[in-house]
Length: 143
Image 1 (cartoon, rainbow, N blue to C red):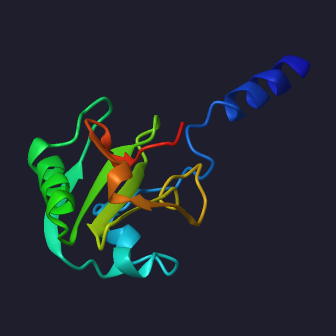
Image 2 (tube, rainbow, N blue to C red; image 1 turned 180 degrees about the vertical axis):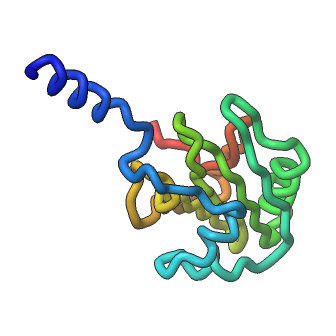
């Protein structure tokens, strides 16, 4: 009887998601824009649309999207872009960026991740701290 209990406990610990019925939305970027707590600029983007990208593990950002954000930032224009990267388990993590008025803002949420939670990770910096790299545009860390 003890052996059966150990097997059941071991199998219960091997589930992939905390909610076995969890299904990521088919359009995670749009789903994130519609979240009640989405920043206003994410829900209703303004300026030049630099596009969206859905990345697989280890895939880099599309050059046209990166070039568009960098060009807009250099010209002092407003622009925005969005991308989705998967977690290790494959759940979507949507991220957003906007440039304009000498500033850069980024936002990402784990709300669509079975292991994540509500809320947004937000970052703001000056245009001079914009770093446009293969993993996406971001505010360069001070240091």
